[in-house]
Length: 177
Image (cartoon, rainbow, N blue to C red):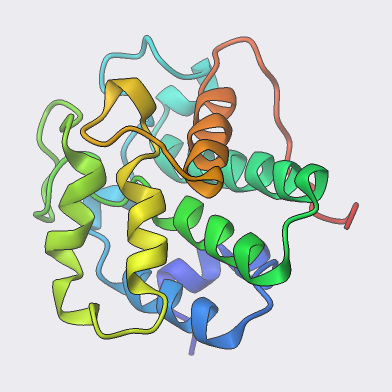
């Protein structure tokens, strides 16, 4: 039986070809605070498209960010493992956006990229843990706790930034390869 994360991100998970990376993402999704599945994408309503201001907006933003990352990976012709790491990071990048606990804090935590490491520390022996978490750590760019340095970190930040613009319309089909 599929969990909530596997159902919500079925199409996005199918984009990850490496079974170990996909399984790791499913494990992380199982740890998502309950609020993640229901909150709007922006606590202020200023930083995301209007349709992400509704309940479930955080999941919608994540789907859009994964789609943009997928397109950037295609454009950059990333090797399969790098593509899978980027997509994995984008699926889990905002899981702890409003804190570690099941009840959301009223505002987005500016350190949320590094909160995910606290939530998932017991998984740190997983083979792709550090690679995925380092991408998540830097996804906010200059507005977050870690500046992007690697290509994958910069692509994740770019995907997150583009997908959060109020006047950019993104409808993920995934059928275009």
